[in-house]
Length: 315
Image 1 (cartoon, one colour):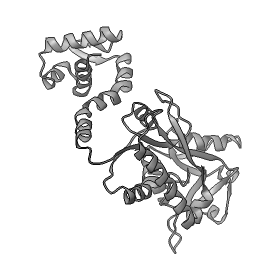
Image 2 (tube, one colour; image 1 turned 90 degrees about the horizontal axis):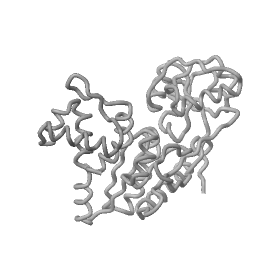
Image 3 (cartoon, one colour; image 1 turned 90 degrees about the vertical axis):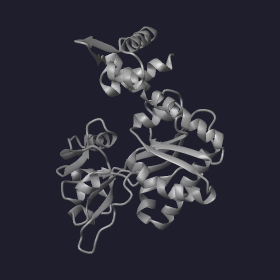
Image 4 (cartoon, rainbow, N blue to C red; image 1 turned 180 degrees about the vertical axis):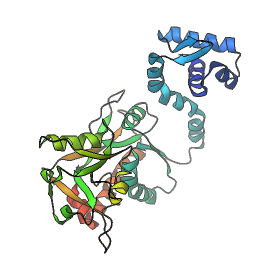
């Protein structure tokens, strides 16, 4: 596979034209055209539709770009990776996860790991479920953190379950249902909800809860991230369905009844969270991170009853 052609393909997509891509790659436009044609012939795909002197991505081209982008990004990082190897002065831990999980579970674990590894070089990136699975599979990251099941991996990944978290309803502290220790799903039937968009995992979990009582949830507001749900719940837009593995800082209430609280929903449902690793050649630093994460979760459970009741650590 011609890496120069792949880079030019990526530049063409990013710049929106072959002429701009050719200029960025220090190529003449005829040479750039030949490279793209050679790449299409090698792949046996039509990547661009040529109309009125312009190149537009075909459906095949769009899909190829989505699938290959993380590989192309990895190629761009090769000089940096080589520099780190030459220095050989620090251990490098590369983690990718979703923003809510990262904000809730990672800070205490990284702090604990740094206590025993002062020279730790840690890179944490945020991505979609698709990104986490694919980029760990391509070995760009040596560990990922997500909820199961694994669905989009390009290779079989090593999976280490960490915890099970119980589904809970997030509500204003002064909401009538906040007086209950556990909230029957039937009691939520007419409540408005702040939730994610269709096909996202927390939207699916909400819909499955209501399927059990033969109802559809009343959606008051759709947002793009679980991190936004608590803010809009507190602002009075509706209730939220989350768990304490992805919502770690919104369970307190003020003396005046402001703030939010979480209550388990019955019947109880759990979601399993896990670390995923490449299938072979796992880094020792990744194993040390998992141990630090388990210790941090155990420590939090000892000091936080709500967390202990809502999260079960797995051996």
